[in-house]
Image (cartoon, rainbow, N blue to C red; front, side):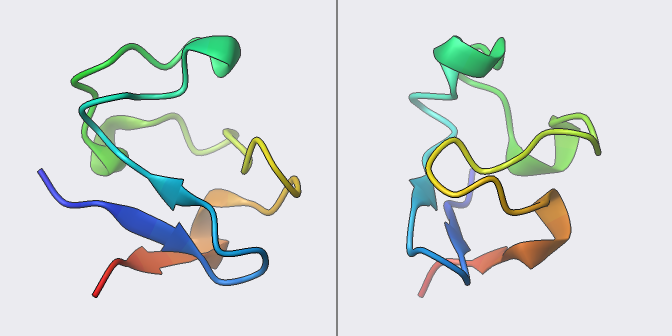
Length: 53
């Protein structure tokens, strides 16, 4: 599973960790996160993320 980086603030979504505070369970691939999810740091929308290098 790939990590994704917020192009606004640099937050990295790690699918092994998920985003439990937002209801995203560990092991959830980025592609399966609901479209209305936002960056937990800056509030950027999912389309503001790109695959981590």
